[in-house]
Length: 449
Image (cartoon, rainbow, N blue to C red):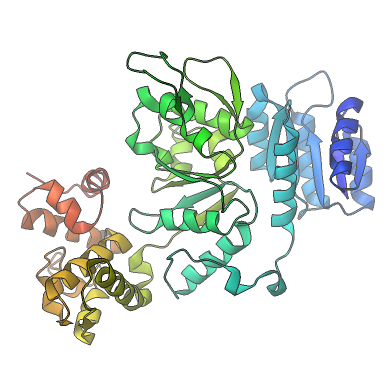
């Protein structure tokens, strides 16, 4: 049963009618005292509650009711109702344990999606719910315990419409995780649209994301669909979301919250039915604290957060990944797949990998091409010249006591030295983007002169 709490009788009845048509049983409460009486007597699957119950619009009554609800029924998800102009109240509610929030006036379709997601994710998972044969890994390789746990979570959340935030360093496979979520969802036959937000300038953001009409600006010779329109009924993958400016964050929040937008140069409001998956290698909680990333947007995109471990924390997967990349490179280039020596695998398993899985893939592919079907030895990867073996790195005379941060800094410094400060070649060798390389150089204070 779902409990609806709102002091407006019309809203209570409207929500109850929408839910009844979908087969949900409901209970109605017109004020916090009435709601608490019901919470003491009955176990609810979900609570939908307003934030204000008097002439005051501070939301204090709603926050107080939320906190009491979590005391009586800590495992019951709570969806808050608030006005668009009072989203900060919903953000405060999320801090106190609310599952999600919707804004007035709501869209019935989106409301039902949020309810279904809340009920699905709050239900305990059982082994009978899963059929491993039905899960498409989409190229995700790994038997490391952290990777297997990550894939279990992907399998559980994929059928829902929950927004997902994927965190991980460059090269860890955030795009593969997003694709796996899409391919195992109910939207798998609809578009999967990938957007690198770090590569879109602020001036082009609206045109790229929402589209534009003919003549909207100089050079707009025809109308164009934006990424959200192209992703309708499917999934949109927003990579590098931490690079967005504050102005763009506001525009993105509105479409993620209300699923509506206007093309540049038009006043007509369009709807889009999308599932959003966001990714970044930035520390978003720190950016929220520093007021460089909006807290309301942060709570909108991270209902589910997935953290991908860097390759240096899953070294037991390196032999498995290496052999898979060898086979893939051989098929792509039409050559016989070589063998690889134990010494070479041992060498690869000791490298620090600032570029993570992407770097390993690049190293293996180059080695396969140069070897052309023989046996890959340690020297085939040393000749690649990307980075030194961890065991051979000279860090203040000794590796004893060196941290992973020290190893990363040493690997980058060695590559900068080897390529005489040519950052394009350094980034390519390390398997990371120039933008990421700049951040790491600044982070470690590496001299590139």
